[in-house]
Image (cartoon, rainbow, N blue to C red; front, side, top):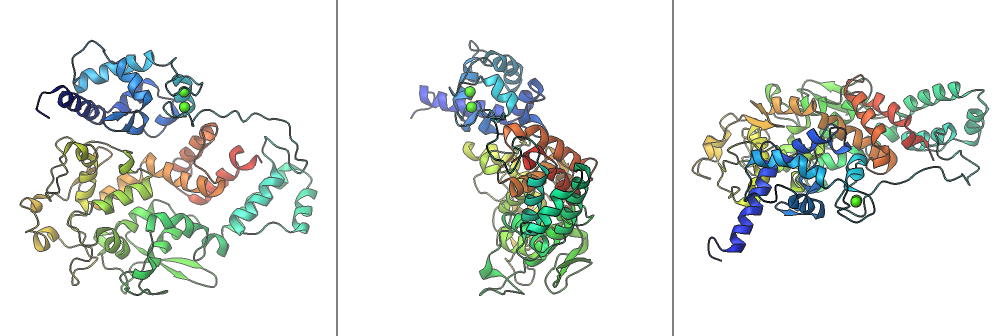
Length: 473
Ligand SMILES: [Ca+2]
Ligand SMILES: [Ca+2]
């Protein structure tokens, strides 16, 4: 293909338009300024997938929008022209039904369903007359909740005698109070907080355990690091009156003792953890994270993207949570990430990764899983000509941070962290992501968790149990 041929120009155009959609001001920002109360905009912004199959290729909604975007103007549009034109183009397609599911684009974006996916549309969950005499369907049902709380948090149904006693209570106020007490009792159970219990289950996708590399208890064939320390900090941060943000910000460790399981804060774990206190950031800097996610790499993008996905619910591979930083990616390690198909994600991912520059994985046995000032200069200087120019300062959510501890603080205080934590338990207890018809309760729940509950998971769980989503059979 020759430069300037129609299809080259077309590719250049779509790439640039996609670039504009990801750069400043981002399309998501303009979208949310136009529809501030859309569920996609409550505490977050729509991902690229709202309009794109994968940038630059648009989905049916993005395609109908593009047709209304100053149709006469020459392409590519500048960032400014693009964001000036987007609100009018959005308005122009409101009444259309891009995916042909019978629901207009406007109703879909107001209800939080996907305007480009016919499988996603508002569900009518109105009462359809109960045929179940056991429970009153379509409204919160205390007897149903009692059974569910005991199953979800204690791991066993109430006995016949317990159910009888619960039913015999004189009023709903007593039942509600009793339920709260029972929930607190179950939150102490081994089923909830013990080894491989419910809390550990929530932590699995964050820690990504691998038995063959396990050091310590349940040692594997190639023991490298003890990730039970990571489970212990996670469980500690999610129980009693502890602050859930400490999973990212702790400069301490947690020791687990058994029979019954207890999690106790300790200053150091000299046998298993090597990062000095001044450079610790909770589970982001444990021996396991540095072993498994940093491994032998100079710039461990894998570690940064895993933390972003695990604790903030943002998957860069799915174009979520993109906050493009101007003049990035710099490609200090010469990986070719400036290529058009990579740059859109790496303009976010690389500045997220820089604060890991001094955290060593297992590339040197002597310095394994430690913070080493000048790590790149000491161990990686021949990797690429500019590798040692990699800064330790980075950017998360468009905000500059000097090091990984600052990264962790910004992350832990974000809406994304509160939403992700709330989503973890919503999925555990309801079996699915918050649905469009549950969105109002979900939003109120994560906002209370972040605000009045000051990131206490125990209070979050009490709130979830009180939702209609949880308590209506
Ligand atoms: Ca539709
Ligand atoms: Ca739809």
